[in-house]
Structure formats: C-alpha cells, structure tokens
Image 1 (tube, rainbow, N blue to C red):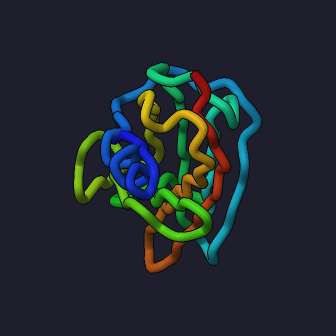
Image 2 (cartoon, rainbow, N blue to C red):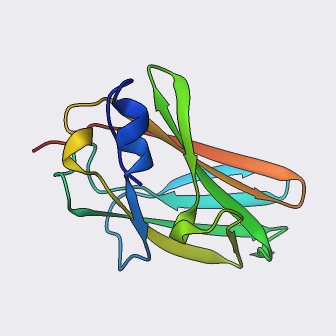
Image 3 (cartoon, rainbow, N blue to C red):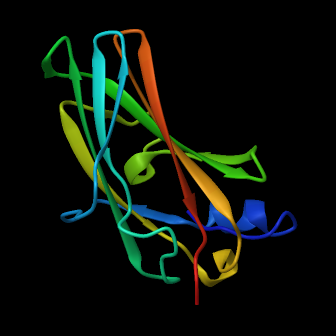
Length: 138
C-alpha cells in the first residue's frame, strides 16, 4: 500500500506496502468493547523513514480466551477523512486467531503527508479501534 497527496494522498495510500512483520518493540495500547479485549502494539515511531518497515502487532481475546476468526483492517485518514481502507497481508477479508504481526512501508510519495492510521479489530459482534498519527520522513 502507498501514500500520496489528494491528488496524491489517495495514490500514496494505495501504494503503501503491507507484509508480515517481525518483532515490535514499543508501548502497547489496550482497548475493550464488551468481552472483546485488544492489545495493539503500534509502530515504534510517529515519523518512520520512507521505504522502511514499520512493524505492528495485535493480540485479541474474547471473554478471556484467544479470539477465533477476528477481522482486522486499516483505515487511512487524511485531515480526518478516510482516504483508503487496507487489510493485513494483502487479504481483502483478513481474519486471525489470537494475534497477528504486520508491517507498513511508506513510499517516497507519502513523505510529509500527515496521516492517521485507524487499526480496526472486530470479533463476536464487538469492535475495538486505535488511531495512530504518522508522517513519513525522507
């Protein structure tokens, strides 16, 4: 998947690359919706370098047990307006059990564009989301 301005913001988001990730080291965020509990380990920075991998990790439980068949998607916002929806690992209907790791790669066209990435996790009729402001740098 990639990111560009409104002539380009949509193009840049469409070019942002997604791929399975390695370990992520940063402070985790926690969210709940009824029995759905999600831990989101966001990118280690709000200003990643262009063309470098930006790791994320999500762990989810439903009623205290690892979730089965949860869905995940990323909604990219520019100025608070959704400009693109993407899915982990290039899968339009991404589902996971328990947890998953992924990476984002911001292309040169995304440099300087202030975006918010909304990570949306759903399971058992409940949804938890986390917003992460990010602006790629050269």
